[in-house]
Amino acid sequence: YLPEFANIVGQMQHDLFHVYTVDAHTLHLIRNIVRLGDQKYQLEFPLASSLAKELPKQEILYVAGIYHDIAKGRGGDHSELGAVDAAAFCKRHHFSERDTKLVCWLVEEHLLMSMTAQKKDIADPDIIYEFAAQVPSIIHLEYLYVLTVCDIAATNPKLWNSWRASLLQQLFVETRRALRRGVDSPVSRTEWVYTTRQEVRTELFKAKFSASHVNDLVDSLEDEYFLQGSVSDIVWQCSSILLHTDTSLPVIAIRDKHNEHGKGFSQIMIYLKSDKDLFAATTAMLEQLSLNVLSARISAASGDFNISNFVITNSDNDALSGEPNRKELIKERLSEALDDPDDYPEIISRRTSRALKNFSFPTEVMLSNDPIHHKTVIEVVTPDRPGLLARIGHILYSHNLSVTSARIATLGERVEDVFFVSEANGLPLSNVEQCEQLQHDICEQLDELASTESY
Image (cartoon, rainbow, N blue to C red; front, side, top):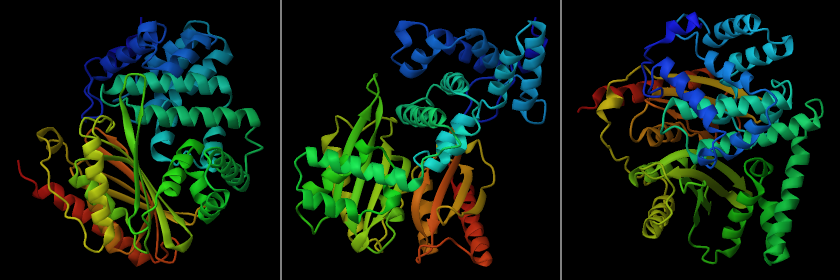
């Protein structure tokens, strides 16, 4: 009935990201679609379950799920080749031209949403409208979201977590809003910043903070800061700063976020006066404390103040709730480390698992300049190793580069991290030789790290 399926039966995917063969992964994806209609599983995928019930034709989702990876191993782009096979299936089964086009679009673009959520700054309105411009309609978006959730959850039992769920949901909600508004009428960055500032002020006034203190703080924060998070996140951060009384110590606040099953992640906010780049010292200390960094953002304020925001999990990939003593230890150790960033925290060498050591490949580093945000974008693809983020941070620090944002994506044994950096003058790198040296140093040091480890 499906002769093309024979090509993926028992086909291995030689990485730790995909823990199933291609055929088994596909069947897990189909099972996830079925489970969306089972109340027992709706808590795990609340938004996807809700949307799936309203999709006009369930068969479109199933066919896209069957064909999304069916062309793996043939050479070439499996998404494009799979779309050709899907079109033939739809023709054999007398799908309408409209439904056939939707199935083929889903197969061809099945990685679009996950890659955008994990690798790009989806708090940026320009990124939202760039993504929305690639989605023909809200129906396409709803099908794609449901397929993406079921695909990620079928790839690796440990891959679907609260952080990835929150990223995908944020991208879905903002894109749906953009499509309703019309991609030809995007919200300007100025309007986005102004609206967010005013909403933050309103919430802080409601919390009975002094109007003058609120206005002084909100006005001191750079515009970019108000593009980087939800109003609730910014209000929490500003409230922590306004409540802080000991100006000799940095403001360090930690809070937890959970999904319906209790799993989640924690957020760390650091606010202090410093003219040093604190990313390297912070990541080194978080590594010492055996914490996983999922995302990082650094924003400036007037008077050389910085706000750093890190999304973290513990070694069980969960939030730090129920660990009050550990949270206090984190605050204490970070305060010590950031008191003098030149006294760089030691990067503790932890053992690399035997499974990770069996997957090794040369580090790849790509540099480009972002003309909109005036930053240099550094993409690093390398094998996962304990302490990796801290080591990259130290290399950037040694080149006198400031990190303004970082997107961390660990896919099994493979890390695909993106860093937005600038020189001390706030401008992107312009010297070709400096770029080549930076690229060389990152590759050399990370590859040396991998080659010198012992069991």
